[in-house]
Length: 218
Image (cartoon, rainbow, N blue to C red):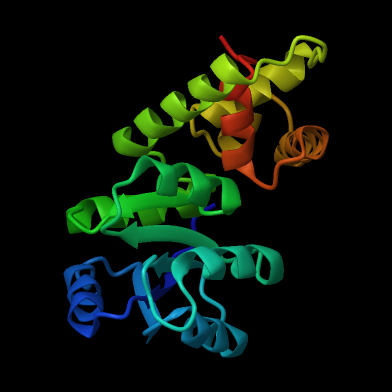
């Protein structure tokens, strides 16, 4: 369930941009910026003192860039969700950052309303996949299948696991999935955890990518 107040930190080496993002989201009273940082190292120090729910993270920064910061946060602060906010539209960055542990990827040309939507979706479902990211990931995963097919490994999942996986890919929360399947939210989380362990992924985003790559859902 999305908390009443979402605590957000932002890391970007351009002060004017940081202030602009904070100001543009000021009208959304359930989003609270708790601190800002000029680079990844400063962000990490801030998180050690006050942990946000979500980080808006630029990629190109001095001292510690967004890629290294994403890796560090994913390892040491796995509960902090990462929403990339960058000028880099290169498809390789999108795929790599999402594989590394980012929960969403937005361009700096994005309207404030979409940044707000990204924050809300990441909090409620664990990821935000807009049309740009979906297009890149589908292309990326198709390319993997085309050039690196696995002919010897058969992936078998139960009907219940398949139903949960399908609903996760449709961006339903655990509570919503539980209601649709008439099971408990705890059971849904247990199934998700089992699938993540089996597929060797770290979060719901990883489950979506794995399902797309291996054609596990209709």
